[in-house]
Amino acid sequence: MATKNTLDRIRKDIEKHLGKKILLRANKGRKKIVVKEGVIENTYPSIFIVKIDDEYNNTTRVSYSYSDVLTSTVKLEIGIDGELAGMPS
Image (cartoon, rainbow, N blue to C red; front, top):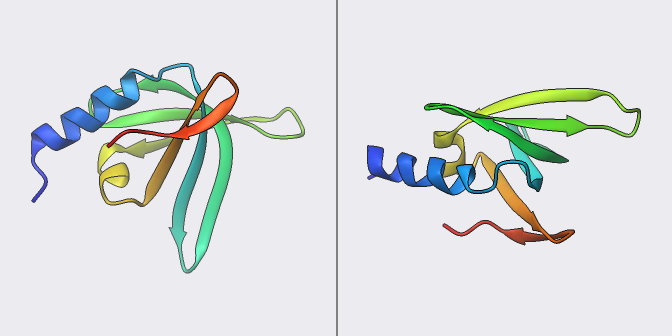
């Protein structure tokens, strides 16, 4: 069973990577999976914000809760030196 400490640990892990490029995989239901590249822009007590730039130079900001990461509805791969690597659990 997940506790508040588990969500706090996820939040701290994400805070360590503020401003870094990520690969975001979000399960939108009904077999729809969205894969986007973005940057972790900010973290708040209950959510985090990802800034996504598309090929047309449009900027979109999306927010997800830490429980989305816990339940694997959202998966993040953190970029390190231009390469993408998995975020530690």
